Figure 1 (tube, one colour):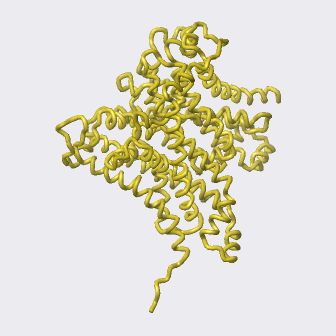
Figure 2 (tube, helix red, strand yellow):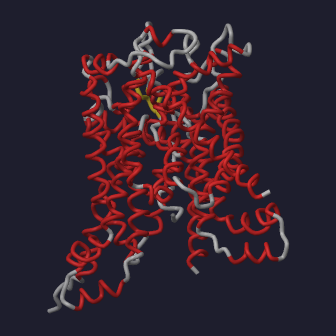
Figure 3 (cartoon, chains in turn brown, blue):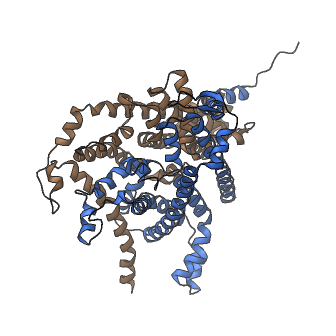
Length: 271
Length: 300
């Protein structure tokens, strides 16, 4: 009986494991296939691996889009981490007048449909001459991720005992020194994982990128769909591009596994 | 003479909050104001007749009163949410119950299972596109051998296109629910479960009468988050069907995107976006209330 029960538990786990990994492995294989090998029936499981698709992407100037994504995601992470952390600390330690409303407003920017925020941003950036520049997209991604920083960092700050800060204040530390030399270093691990989440969310984001950038300023995610419209079907390249986009994500996610629940629910659920 | 006293704490709060306030004014308040003004005009970049004359509430009147496309998109969005959320919940909960034990390699299994949720939705779309391509997709070939989709692609028939998008969403987001449920299950006090077991309760009874009630706050959060996110679905539909064939997979997000950035009807599009934003603000308010009360209850 006990043994049967154990297999019963293993069944859904095995099923989920295979369903999660097989499709991904399939495009990993496809990215190393020659164009004609893709079409052979029955499916070719053993083939001469080639880096053609990756080389072709490089010839096309793919690294330009990669660079765009790196610039946008790291700049927006830096921006929203620096302003969000300061606000989160205030929310954690002080009663802010109208703080409730502000807190909710920040949340609303994340829960609302991105399209409803992207259009107004497009309209105003267009008037300011910032449409189709990295700056617009950086601001947009920072907005979108602000709630994650504020909610998560507030939770980390809440965990730091006030006695530590009070002791430092008695020793003559001003509020800035308390924050930057005492409290923030204690939340360092949390800060890094929040940064990784913001980085990933910005890196993965499509809608703002589509609307606020075009042509050579596109980020990876906005550039990927343009590959599939091709008449001869650049399938190995599509697969290779998808792999290039997703491998950094999988590497980074591994490092923040401990905070995965918090990150994915922007702090609403404590892991 | 009394000098102006500056409280250092007040200064500190202002210095900390000012960047966020300025930032929100630039990226949220100002754009919303522009959108409200535009929604009252007949602004269109493709028509020479419509150069932004003030038309009052006409855009909203047309949208709510007589735009069948809007109602089609609304209906598809509602159908999508109703189809994906319950399935994702049941599958995610089942998976979490199975994973709620210690075994070798659990960390690795969890990382792999989370792949669909953490990779970009664009990549999810490309993965499934490659699996379902009529010419060589591995799934298409599998389905061909049992006689399905021999002459048509999955995405060229309205019903199967919508169905495929539903299944892909379930594939993508079930691990998300699993993760939240697993967090709840592993943080759960063991005493009530042990007590119930001693009283002779079956596994099923324990699940229904002990574990699920204890999970309630997390279940509410998970369902709300998924409902909100599913109603905003855009990326997979944009990449895989573009709302088609016809308008069979058009949802609110793709409808708003088409109005603004393909038909360049910016005045009307602004009205569409404001309406959606207002509706989601109401939902967000409900979410906020529920999360803060459950967190407050958990803290006491």
